[in-house]
Image (cartoon, rainbow, N blue to C red):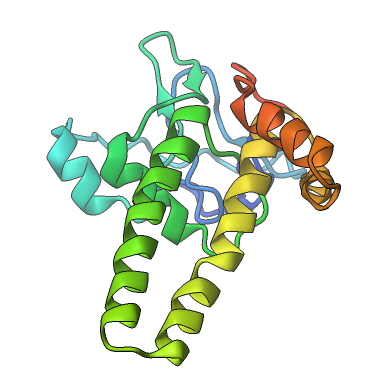
Length: 189
């Protein structure tokens, strides 16, 4: 049994990605940490064929940090507009992990567009219930993505409560959300 070096989750021998955080376990320089028992034999390495970007996007269930050529992990990878919105919905109720500056703001723009379209439909059919549901659907992922963005800057999610302090708190939270994230792993991943 191996463990993910990023989140510490137990991983089956020979697994390519961590089932919890999606970390690439076969990135050079970051071997999975073996279990406490020294008698565990390493699993035979399987030959992995390189994939095109389209194949990688089609087969991955969750976005993961990008590995650079030197084996270091790029925590500030930009998933693009569609990838950022996808990451927003995949982390719907996930408060742990990180979200890069570009991905956070791209997803914020995408979700704003989707929300406005939902409100327009609700207004056009004169449905207060649909109007309420559209707003309700985006409350939790909005909070979780902001918390993950704060984690990227090495701040606790508790800093989100600054938003409840009139004017000054909202400005401070915006400054934190615009702060560039850590380039290396921090206490949140």
